[in-house]
Image 1 (cartoon, rainbow, N blue to C red):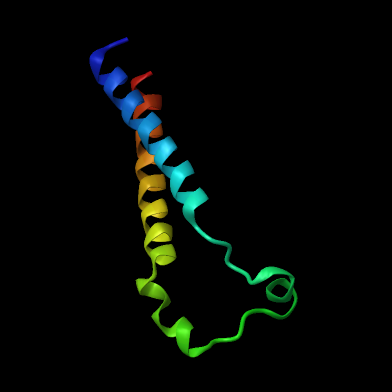
Image 2 (tube, one colour; image 1 turned 30 degrees about the horizontal axis):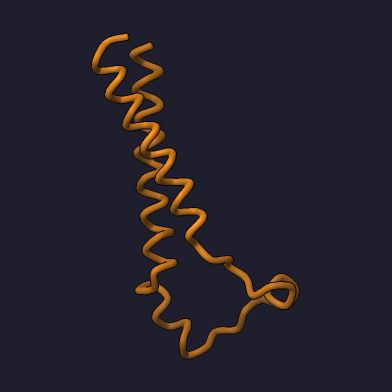
Length: 79
């Protein structure tokens, strides 16, 4: 295995572990059974959702997932 493939494989492994950790740290999107049935009403507190830790984790998960996808495609091309 060449050193480039080894480096990309290690980066892909770290991205995969990062995705797992970020998903586990996120809280659920609905408020239990009542959120699943009726939906969650907008409140004053939901206005600043973009600045919460969950929103930042969700955004980071998307970016790391995209990097994981690109690394997977690069490994496919190199293989």
